[in-house]
Image (cartoon, rainbow over all chains, first blue to last red; front, side, top):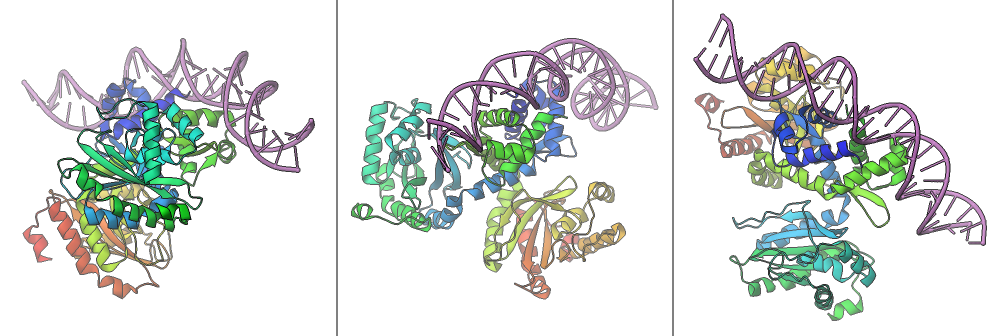
Length: 254
Length: 254
DNA sequence: TGCAACGTTGCGTATTTTGCAGCGCTGGTT
DNA sequence: AACCAGCGCTGCAAAATACGCAACGTTGCA
């Protein structure tokens, strides 16, 4: 493994919390100043960090550009964007678009709630597959072997008292999700946050992404959230069709 | 300088063009496979890249998260966002929000044109200070010494036949921008693209960012673009006030 | 079944990074 | 004005590290 690279990446991660000076970084990372300095220089050469006039370091433009390009490469994101915008505008709740990456989900787009109570999530954040509606949606349609492999790599720990931690119980839950075509999360991932999610399908019929709506229980009750399911399914259906999916008879019957 | 870190950063940059396999990366970077492999492993450990089931490497979630955090740290971006959205919706042209970083400008937000002719720019992209309306705006209000320092570090090469490459002529242009309160770019940065820009000011009255509108000459003539100046100044004025700026008498007289 | 392409590993060498000690600058204090 | 403290930065020698080689395992294709 490359130790110096790992240090440099940790520098970037620390800078994600905000700008920092050379020895703030050094003390926080417990690396000698001179080492940090040289890593920062290389990072700055490639525009991954920037040093301002007060000798403080910031995350650099290259990071923003790479992220922008990487997000654009997920074609589902651009296809979904206008539909998600309209959907979010209609009901005003925090809406996420997620993909399965390894044994975790990654938020690849986020639309903010219209409330002043905002969620701490953001694009690029990773989340567990077992305690989120998006995770359930992304796993439900996987071949059993593939799902098993994902679960092998996943951390199935309890995030709240409601989290499903038993593997068999979780597989039952996946069957339910597959059956009804959408997933719920009743304060399983975060206390006081309920969530519903539905799949976006590609041309081959496989699930390529998940759209989920997260609502604090103080803002709406679980029952009120469930009322959104039809419009959620409508929007994921539209996105799926835009993405090349053609409904089968079986799907129609649902 | 840290050679291995530089290689790793180049790997990320190459991955910005799209997913790649191990030895696509190795041949493209002219680095031995084994080296690339180990760097990729470290990058993957920190979630800067992700390896899919087909052993292809993609940009990772951590990159997206850092970018999202870094962009959020620019408070001007969140303040400007709603106003830029409304502004963009009203006239439908590509709109950028930029900051001065070193001797270049960096796009920290972008709103797409409503036309199908889109621009190749993106958030995080860097651009020259001397040939862009945003660059002129960001330099115009700098103290002469600071502006000189920026220009010392800048590449003042000709980007089109119209680019101002003479330093004194450019300083004259800056005086004009300062005088009229906004800047133009008449195919100085890209052929067939005209641009206007205006400053966003902070509480201290200093210019903290620039809003610019870019329009291909096939979509609108230069004169038509100029007609947008009043509404551009209106939106930058609003953003500036939201950002804590209080107009002085001098500013009112303009 | 054989071949080819690709990803992967172990190991010795040598390049790199590292930490130390010290220098110079800047900004604040008496 | 002069001093001090804090911080960024450099040269050098030691040592840890990454590197490249050669070879192996696996997968997919002819």
